[in-house]
Image 1 (cartoon, one colour):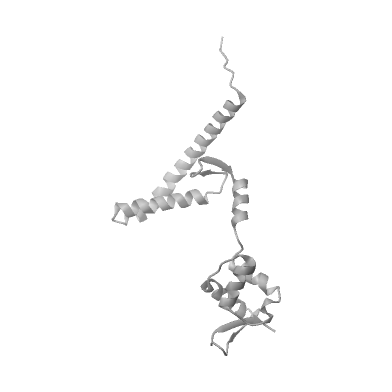
Image 2 (spheres, one colour):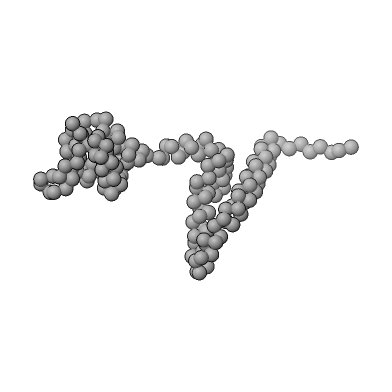
Length: 167
């Protein structure tokens, strides 16, 4: 005769969660071993062991942060997050990129008047809560000018480029 042991529901759930965590960590360990083998030649080119350790540590942190398939193991909080929960968090934090913001500005009357790159960056920060460097915007603005969506003109006041909607 087999003795049965009753396990309370909350304890059973904790055991199940622990088993899922162990399985996930095991799969991640195998994946990590494979990835480390692939990059070992590059890592070994650095003669300093301290540099090698620092590189591997940063790589591991990056891999953990960017792990997206299935469930993600969050090392800092030591808990499992579903990929759906992670996506919701990521999307709520993510801001639109410079290209998207500039294309949105094109749909408004903003470019009816000429604006310098510095003016555009300040406007993006104030109106879109997007803090772009002028170097991030310059290439996109040049592309929009080359596509004839904007016109690029030199300012007579300061000899810098200003951007206005193409007629």
